Amino acid sequence: LMKGLESQTKTMDDDEIETAEGQGADGIASLMKGLESALDDTDEALAETILDACLRMLSSSTVVASLGPYVSTTLSKTLRIMMEEAVVIEVLLAILTKTIKSTKSQNAFAGSSSDDNIKQLLVAMDTHAVGEETVIEYACLVIEKLAEDNEVVGTKLSDAGVEARLTAAESIITNVRNKKYVDQARDALLYV
Image (tube, rainbow, N blue to C red; front, side):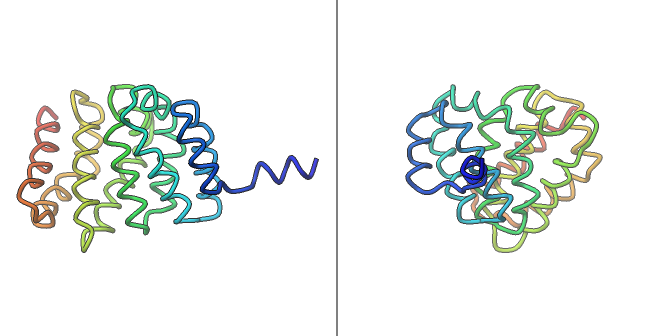
């Protein structure tokens, strides 16, 4: 019994992460279990390694679909627990830009009755407003994905104060090519 309990709480090592990554969509559950363990231990390095593996796998539509159910659970939990860790938040937001693809995933992230994840996204923009331009760029892309053709989520974003963050992002983002991310987010919010 003790041996079984140890295996449930054991953190993933690099070989296990590589094996799960090699399994494609079939490895997502293992990676998410490993990420949960990293979050329980507040292990930034492990969380980043697992998220990096997931990000590398996102060229496969089956992997994107496999990650979908985790948008409102493990991935949202990562946003809350690793808020101060810019590198983890950056990779997480990159993943969300690829996994928020439908009304179902938009609503899953935004929550059916709570807008806590939206508030956390905006807190991440505030937390990383200085020195973390890429986090802000990805946050704008996530806002765009959340609001695209979804009035309910767009309204939640607007009510939470997204416009102030987008205004701030205009001066934070210095890469001329990437300034368009602010406009894209605003365009997605236009019908609200």
